Structure formats: C-alpha cells, structure tokens
Image (tube, rainbow over all chains, first blue to last red; front, top):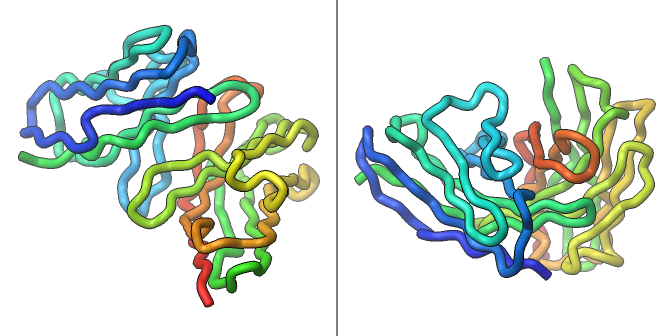
Length: 107
Length: 120
C-alpha cells in the first residue's frame, strides 16, 4: 500500500506569511494528489486536484506543485480565514490514502 | 443548492449495526461516483469506501472490509453505508463525498458529517 507522509504536523505562522506544506508518497503516484482544507464543524473543502490544478472558487493564493513522490501546498500570503487543518490525499480508482494532516495556527 | 447531507448517526453498542445515509441535492446524483470518509476524535481523515455510478465496483479500506457495505439508490439520490460488527475504533464522524469525475479523481463536494459513537 502507498503511504503518504505529510509535514509538518503543526505550523505556526502570521497573517501575510508564505506557508508551505509537504507531502511525500512512498512510491510514485504521478500527479494523482489532492489537497483539502478542514475547519471544525464545516464540510471539508477541495483546494487542489491533479497535484497543481486549483479547484473551482479557491483563492489564487493557494497553489500546488510536484509529481511522482514529492508534493507541496503553498499559501502565498496567509489570511485569517486560512487557519485550518490541511490534508493531502493520493487517489486511484480503488482507494484513497490521506496524509496525517497539518494544522496551521496563528503565531 | 448543491449539497450532501448525511444522516443516521448515533450511539451503538460494540458488535452492533448501524446504517448511515447521505442525501444529494442540486446535481445529478447518478452521474457521480461516491465515497465515505471518516475522522475519529482527535485523528486524521481515513478513507472508508467507494462506489461507482451504477453501484457496482465497491471498494473498501482494509479496516472495514467484510463488515461495512456501501450502496446507493439512484432513484432516491441517496448513498448508504451499512456498518455491522461495529468496534470502538469505528467511532468517528462519517462524511460522504462526491468524486469529481469518474472514479479516478478527487472529492469535490463533501457533506458536513454524521457522528457515530460506539460504546456500551
């Protein structure tokens, strides 16, 4: 089974900071990677699919990159509304695997 | 409005059964493969199961295979998860999610979740 390792587990940052979260796959997953944002009491939100394609309605300050085994999610200028937990996810036709999550907190 | 709404969560004893459901609105439910994802208290997201548009080709996580059954009723725009032989470790918020295109794609729409508690 493919394992997804996400880092860091917690990230403290200030409004306006550039923030980067990394996700590594235990073997090549090509570009079958998505990023999600979770806030307490709310439905999870798709941010990025196919590793680098911005989902509909997602602000342009979010971006994704990478292919194969290493991927990143970047927030170019952190906003108060971005305080949340972020998950990467590998997907194939038969299963999905999530990373452990990264909680973004205010410094 | 395009949305998914889960229902049916609650308290069940270990070894018991529960069926949770997910109603779809605002889109053609039968056009989309669907999935269940859960989040145990204080833990991360865990994929549970996926089902194709027709209801065939269900797949399950190893942790639930043989105990959980995913199904769908396209005439009622509803997704189900039958959970049997429940264990303490199955306690979680269960989310239904829509797969963006086909089976090989991300989840582009999620419900707000339904809480399943497993305790005696």
